[in-house]
Image 1 (tube, rainbow, N blue to C red):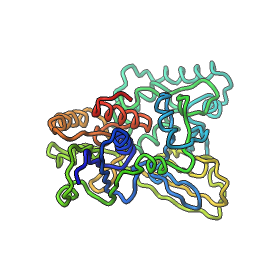
Image 2 (cartoon, helix red, strand yellow):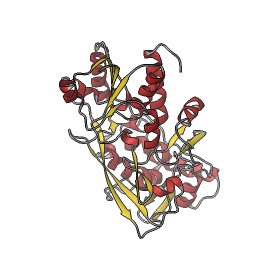
Image 3 (cartoon, rainbow, N blue to C red):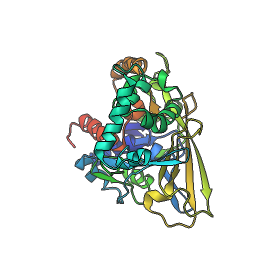
Image 4 (cartoon, rainbow, N blue to C red):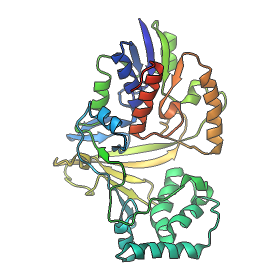
Length: 370
C-alpha cells in the first residue's frame, strides 16, 4: 500500500494529526509499540471504574478553541482538580491557599498568612538562591517548604533539593483565597467513559498496527509512505549518536479493592515525606464521582529512566536542552520526517497543548489554518 503518512505513535498527538489528515483526504497508517492506543492517557475499566493506567490526567485549558475541539469527541464532567497533601498525619489542601495556611498556622486572614510567610523568608537572608532548596525557601518560607515541597520534590527528581538547580521552581503558587481548584483554567473536566474513547474516535477509519516497533516495521514492511510523523524519542530515532537525553520515569502499582467503597475520599492524595517511596495515591472512581461498591487505587513511584523503561518527563536542564538542540538540528535535515509530541520535541506538554501543537503541525503541513 502507498500511504501519505506513516504515524509513529497512537497517542494524542499522533491521533489528532491522523484525524486531521484524514479529513483532508490524506491516507495514514498508525503504528505503536504498545498493545493499546492512546499513549499515556490510556484508560481501561477495572471493577467498572475507568482507571488512568499511566497516572492521573485531568483535562484543563484556557483555550476555548481547544476545549470546543476536544468536546467533539467526548462529553466532559465537571470534575475540579483539588488534590490533598499528606505530611505524616497532617492533611493540607493544594494548591497552597488559605485553607493550607489556616491548617498549618491557625491563622484566619490573608494578611496574617502573608505576614507569616514574609517573616519566615526574612529570617533566612537568602538573596540569590543557589539551588532549588534556597529558591523554594525564598518563595514560601520554612514550613511550607519542609512539609509540602522538600520530600515530594526529592522523590520526584531522585536528588536532594540542594543538588537541584534553582530554575526548576521559578515560582510557587501561593493563593490568599480559600480556593482549592488546582488549575486557573476556565475549562476543566474528565471525559465520561475515559480518554481511550476519545482516541478511538480520532482514529476511526484509520488503520492501526499495535505491538509494532518503528525500525523493525520499516525493515519488514512493503508499504511505502510519502512522509513520516515520529512521536517517539528523538534521540532513539538517531540511535543515540550524540548521547542519551535524560528522562524521569514512573512505576505504577494498581490495586483492586472490591470490598472497599471509598479508600481515601479524594482522587489524588500526595505524600510529601521523602521516607514514603511513592509520591501520590490515585483513587480513580472519584474522577467520575463513582458510586461503585469497590474501588481501584494506584501508587506512583518516580524513578530514573533507563532503556526499556517508559520515559515520562524530560529533564530540561542546561545539558539536556543543549543536547536536544543538536538533535533538533539533525531532525531538521530529515526531509520527509516530522517530529512531534512530548518525546519527539523533548518537551513536557499538558493535553491541551498537545492538541494545539498537533493542530498547528498538521495545519502547517497541509497549508491550512485550524
